[in-house]
Length: 211
Image (cartoon, rainbow, N blue to C red):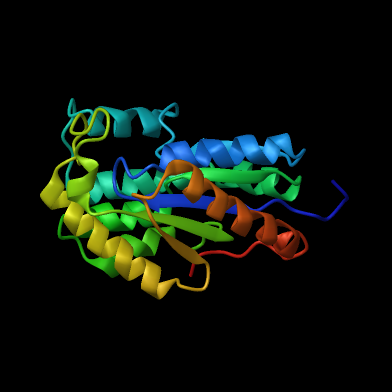
């Protein structure tokens, strides 16, 4: 990759079990097969000390006040920012399963103020594209292992979906909404097509931040 060409920051968002993990993996595999440096990531990144506390919370072994866990999720993204920036500037495309928008959606769905939830995300690297996999939460309950983690409850996921819809409307310039119930290969083909157009476009653009 020639000097000065950066990679893209691509985010997958959506309710639990909407297919984000599968689609992000397929996209990374496709990019690598074309010789494009691509790295998978996901948040929460559970290996750091902050990530381990989040993991204990998500697996129901630890209780924390809603505001505290929200700020910990945000801190977990901030602690990886320098590394992400470095990788992007070196020309790697980062394909990330969940980002700031999940933090806002899940905490807002619990009743916390939307703007308060968004505030600690300002200044993080802005994605070049967000692929939002949207499906009625009732359709997701029959997917593997549903209900094992704290937030996998249909009524709660319905509230989460409403916040994602709001974010999608607010950030329409770089969000791409898909019906998550379509066949995996069709969805992958549409995502791949958008990504292939995106990469050369952003390669010479400076990194932006969420505002």
